[in-house]
Length: 591
Image 1 (cartoon, rainbow, N blue to C red):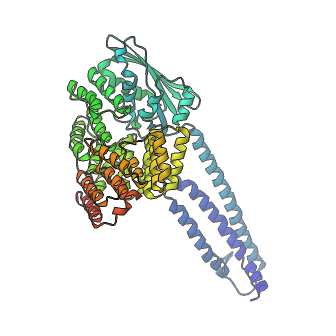
Image 2 (image 1 turned 90 degrees about the vertical axis):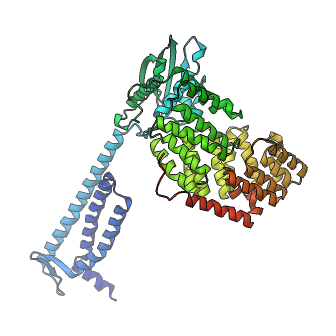
Image 3 (image 1 turned 135 degrees about the horizontal axis):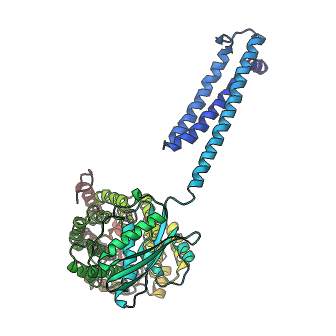
């Protein structure tokens, strides 16, 4: 091929100019589309599709420009003979005009888009979504009897904001760690990664409460709002609602975005019932192993004083769920009681996201993890700041094998409750169950670097070492830190793997002497002892009791010796049948 001749022919037919003109026009179109499409919420693939379409169009345009010329008489097929000087000048002027005009148009579109984007950025200096920490209130009363309001009033404000989609409300378990602290607001907000902090104080005289609150911007320590609210103790929840209104006003969030509970009519709560509920919340938050009755007696007292008060019913359900999660009672024993309290709370406060979450947990207790998912989705929509939803939804997804989304939910739980180490424990367990031991190791080491004496994280490190087969190292850690040496199933498993059978059996006896121990834990210890038939019996018992620790049996390498047994496979099949047959998949059962 004579490339020199081809080049001359391309020049004669103005193909090169036509291509440049096409590219210039395409540039204008792409610049305009990249500005306008996102404004109207168009999906990303539309812009990509447009670029691909223009790229394909260039091929056809090149062929078109070879075949046709733009003449004073219009489009005409290119002659094989040399065109006249008049036609060539006309064609060149038109193409030059297209190129220059398109370039100027693209430049104008680019400048306009930049100006528009800049104006948007400047108008949104304040974040549209805020992280807020509500600190315990300062008690300025002379009467110690009202000390429960220090946490109780702040907890009620957190409950008011729990349904907000414009706020991430940091859990009381994290923010209340700053009770009576000397730390500055700047340091507290940094540790909690909060944009806004609410501080307040109260004084009580003859059943009248005087509350003063400040909404403080964390970035510049600026007081965004100050309010003084007075009222009777029986109107304490109404005062919390007013504080919520002040927060929304301070952050310039439109009232249309406020949860329905904020700014509604006055709410009357029996002061004594409020007191007992606040004490129950405090006992559950500070739980260090006491019996369930020591926690729930406050909620029961609140219900006895005022049976129309919804919060203590939620408190009772949460306390029972907590004990199931810690392995103190079986889910089979707790499920009916939890549902009873949840339905009562729903009747008193219809449409509660907390109740939707609890109903999802009840389905999880029944091994109906697929049926639990719609309830958890509803709970996230209604109450996006309820940490329990993220934790239990993640657990259900782990059992269903969706570890990726479970990790995402666990990370969100950590955002809402950044100082609760259990969230990190659950996330590390997720990685262990996936076999991603390096990620689990990194997470555990990071936590121990911040708090070398945290018991649950140390225990988790022993679990991780056991999963790696590093039994000597796990043993040294357990003994040095005295972690469940007499009754912990991980300690018993490690003892057994190191040949200390008598010590392992002593741990087993101590576990069996308790009123309830999750059968899954006993099955793991028995696997360490090599008593696989007995271990399978305990797995069957776990299945019948709907033991929530069965995830360990399913995913831990400690139970690998029994996973190929036909009895184990039969139980796994039955679990799958439960998940598929107890629900039709059409949506949550009406509460």
